[in-house]
Length: 461
Figure 1 (cartoon, rainbow, N blue to C red):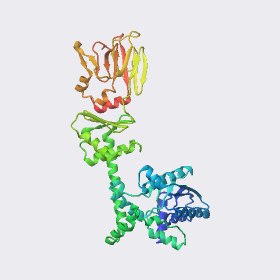
Figure 2: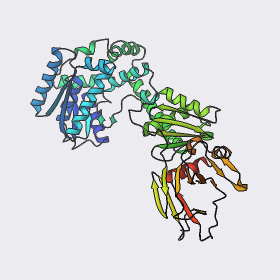
Figure 3: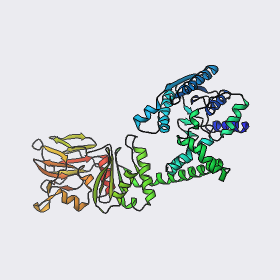
Figure 4: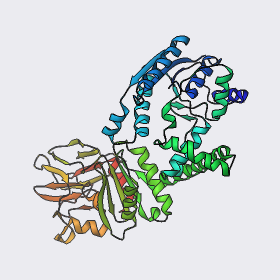
């Protein structure tokens, strides 16, 4: 049994190339973490070990006795030790989470601080296969997704669990044979903690039905992980096909393609997308995803809503525009009174009378400088433009005719002279201002906007 423990440990370290490194290890003083620490000390891995001990202040004098034990252990082996004390009951009340979850949050934060401070590469934890089974049932009872049912991974950077393939019995046999002392955590027998309840009551009950429960659950976790990997690859490929980036903060979804997908594919694509694009401050809930799918499937031609304070979805003519961290369209408003180039955000405007580059798309107008003072701005409700036959038409009606989504309308630059619109980028030129390129008195205007061009090409109006 002890030989199996050493083989499992050695195999994991060889697989993940954990040698000649600085590492941090969390040590509570219990048998699992003490076993891992002493195994590392007596190994030939040449590791520079930093020990962390987190005192939850949950068990009165016992908590301090554990801390003293770890200090003596580190002193014996001349190891650097960092300790932290935190009243977890008070912290749990403040952040409104359970004691187990609160402990995990603050413990990890402490470990990661020491990882950075010590310039180490990994944080080693002493979870073993029995812990894995407990974690599986904890997550199953909480209604976890398939991803959550993968439970713990051996390597989940920066966390590394080299004992995950070993059992509690292996660890205890090793400690007893080597006559290594540890401390018992009395809270491990308290049924008020979910993990303890599962360990003491549920697992023994299920083990009577299936004596090989641990290996069965481990096999199930492996199958779930394999299926999740296949699904993730499929979803990632679909996401790249369905969701197109316009800029770092704007993305389009072609609804014809999106609505052909299964309900599972739709939700997974959106979860995959948001997990890559947003930080933890913009939590996307199950209901957010359902609302977004409902918007996509709705017969309404246009609509909009905010998923969160900083994430907006707009629907228009078969497309969804997702805006992350952008609440309003960037304002365009500047004057042109001479030849030259102007820049506003991602918009570049060039005005010339001659020397036109062949690979640049110039539009030509009957304008002269310095008499003309051109204003470039965003579209506004009520805007009109004069077309052939001297009649004018509302830009809104042109947008509807051309099926320009609402989310694009306010991004298109409008050019006006003395209050009269003579050009709407990508759409129309005022008939009174339109000129022949051969006319030497005409002025050429070229507009360049990478983000706008991507959006226009994507919605294809």
